[in-house]
Image (cartoon, rainbow, N blue to C red; front, top):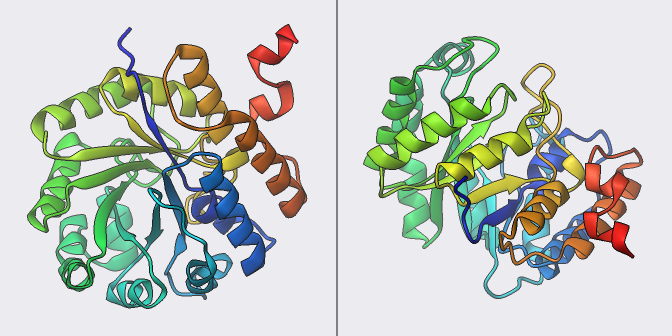
Length: 303
């Protein structure tokens, strides 16, 4: 089985993890959490989002968090945005990179925004132009490319039209986000292999939710297809608040532990990652779903 020598784990817990929690962390708690994540060796951190506070109240203080962060050299601090207003907020608070998102499910996109996914991406031009004018990098995300509750399977050609719309805007870092948690390993391998072959200029990031317990298996399948960048959330917090039953991102510590056991370098201190997950569990005041958090590392059995 093919496996890479090294992968990059992007910690999305501060955004995708916390946005699904009833308890809203203070600015100070969020800053402390993000700085701990950077100290553990993560090179990419999704700090929050610049969506409207009424839509995602847990992310209302993202601007303040960015202003208060002691940024670590060599670490990318990114945020999710929905429009040019998000870019303006990113400029004002010192955000490094913004990420745009569109649904691959045409029915979902039409129902929510009254436009096709391609039309949604075309409207991102104002945002991308404004970001580049202020030296802010831009990446794109495609939600539900593997399946959705509204459309079940998504045709590959429909995913490719969105990819090409992003490329037309000059966006060549694209995340495939299994927000509905419907992806299966063979499907992941096939789609990733095809997209890598058809669009070699694109840097692909895979974002899996563990809704049906397939997150780790899907990461292994994506690795076999040559993908080396993955999102994960501390303790497995998160999920999409707008998708029925889609609770739980793939667990950061479980992914790092698997990589260590497979001889794949991550650059992340797993013990510090576990400490972060325990601390987050205390902050949100409920049990987290991480397996290594409960059972311990394999190497702990030898002590």
